[in-house]
Image 1 (cartoon, rainbow, N blue to C red):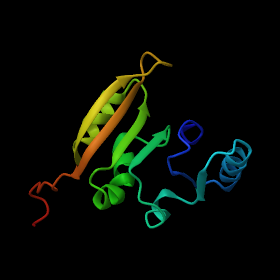
Image 2 (tube, one colour; image 1 turned 135 degrees about the vertical axis):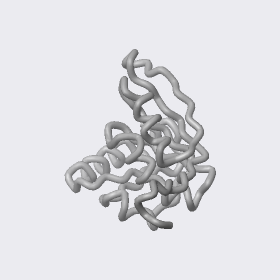
Image 3 (tube, one colour; image 1 turned 45 degrees about the horizontal axis):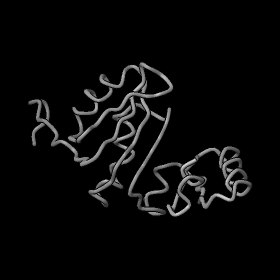
Length: 136
């Protein structure tokens, strides 16, 4: 949808499932959308593209999403992330803050009153705490 609405934006889609990747390629071709589809796991795409904005829906918990995005955030400190989250969005934000510092704006979803859209920026890893069990 983004590529259709903003043909001036370079859109890359990362999909690990080959069938879904082929579907995305067919849709982009039929809609004449300027999209590049990478059939790969996210972890294998770090050297393929350096995004300015990352979006994901129903992929993983927020802490896992931020972990997956971290290599790109290290490379591009201005990286913005937009994630659709369900009614447990606040819990996921709190859990993610144990490993990361970040700015987070929340917006209500227009499709589900309990869901939230998160816009995350300024992602930084928090220093590991020494719990006394492991010497530094």
